[in-house]
Length: 209
Image (cartoon, rainbow, N blue to C red; front, side):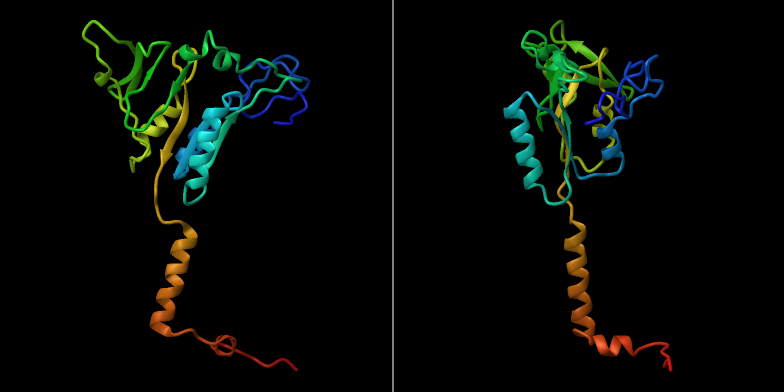
């Protein structure tokens, strides 16, 4: 955001801007993949023109105990207008977005007629019918301890796959400050509250004159 027309780390290859008049050479990095790879306990994605979805994602991020990472697809009307129109246009959005719902199969399409399943660790798009049921598609589990499934979801992208939107991972683990307070309480229980003066005077000391 606020690049004033320059390409950014998330711009697509070949993006023509003021700083890349012949097209950018860099492959974009995936912020959600980076967060999941860093073992973030809450990772989600939304876009700015779906207020209901964005509010729900923000609500869940706010309620999460610990740091929450939310990627927001935001339209820039000045330098990059219409970039996410395929996700916001009512005529096309259902075919290009995969709304993540915990405990439910990965389905998308106007009538939820297509789904995502994994075979030999690789994702594929299937069309329901002819013996393929919703139950045959992968089920989203945002509470899974392992981050592998969430990382695979984060790799889904056009043109071969829809864009996953929603909460990829929401793990309830002890936060750093909670663990720190617990450690302090344990130390006080075993050693007492201690004295700052005794601490300063302990160990190797010397007098300066």
